[in-house]
Length: 236
Length: 389
Image (tube, rainbow over all chains, first blue to last red; front, side, top):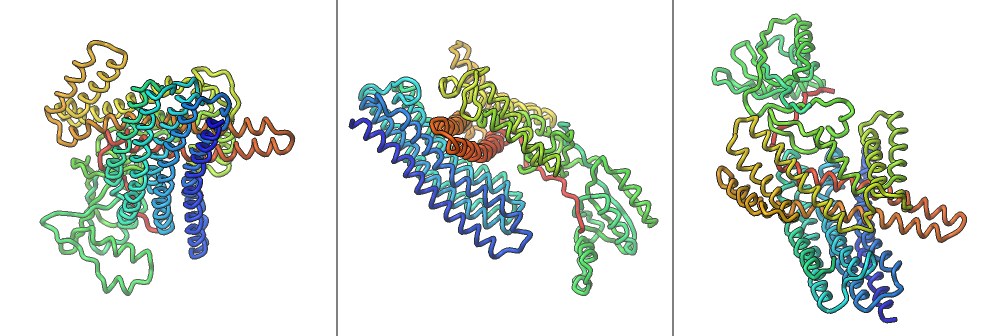
């Protein structure tokens, strides 16, 4: 009984955390788009529809990842051991926190990009690349989350069967949650400045890309360490 | 294809009184102007008084151009770039002005020549994407054909859905026949790629069909290795193109030290995984080669090789997210009855088609921009003809 309660709690946590953040950011982007629609002329409005839609959809992706983990947990509620239940909780945390933070990062860059695109529509493709960086962190969280779900028997057979596997799993979760959670927001802030620089001179794109990609590699190292811990503990 | 040497530099001398006629002829044959720097000539200045009096937008634009030119007494020197394919049009346009002029065309010798790439028209949507990034240096390889292939592979792996791909293909084809836009042409390719990888991994809109390769949800670890393997291949390909670019410029030592070293290390890492005894030697040789002519940035890039490779694990994560949620919607709709069932099925398909399309597309773009192009694309500039509306 307690196992099911933990698993349901995990599922609520994963979709709840990501949903709150994504919903808030989508609202913010929606308001910005409407303001642009109200103030701009007719011919810009038509060009502006696709960018506003795409940026808003991007703010939605974190909640989709949370939803995936949530659904996978709920589909396998029967025959959970207590270790499986803890595993689902860890997987919910490892997607929830990075995706929560990623939604805020995406919101930051997207609102800057919307402002830039409303002035110069041709910047859409380039600014979109900077929105990707915070979103990437949500994907890293999802990756660890999926590996943990494998360990807790939601996908494939359960491998977290004792404390020897549980403690490394907790460690891996903490690493990706902290590094992902911090880096996603930082990448969002960096992206805002990159889009501002792009607005001034779009020849600087390649340099901006390298500058933003460098701190992103910190998040990749976090991911790498998490994966290696899970691999070392025999979870996948 | 593959060549970026598609412009000629020109220098044109004419009289000041014919300047406007000559300029119109040049602009009509789409050239790009360049600042004249010749110690014998003085830089022409824009006549601000004339500019403020001029009401006609076209003539104002012509006046603004004057800052590019050099002048000596009543003679003006104009300098710039013209596409190689355009030379006959340029000459006939100039002859039509009936004004005396002298023009000299030459192969560019400096690196600052702008880049034009020519590809068959079926590659034009990919050319559009390559042009988002900064241009290759003059004389380097045009990466568009290779980009087209690998872009379709990464997109297909992330999207992999027969029904979604078919819908995307059908809609894009209809729209393309009506509007002839590059975006819809790209949609056709992306749809086909989605269908192909859908059959490979056995996914069709949440229903399972017999896979040609394996099902990603059942063998995630195998799939992770495939993704990372593709990443290693992709990065090596980038270094290989960089190697050829350096060889073409006769920088042999640099080519070996900056690119072959990385390829050797990647090869060593692969051999290490399949437990071959030669692996450590290859890695060591690669590492030592780095110090022959490598700059500090190459040595700093060493840990990012690891990061770049791990970055390809997103192929797994996005694929599983896309397939997982589509499956969940489809299972939900199968368990219901009547109109509700059909509604949920359609709703799930539409949501996942748009989301999957955008996410897979932009992440493929990111993999190419950050992981692939940084290995070889320089910082050239694209050819931009001067236009007057």
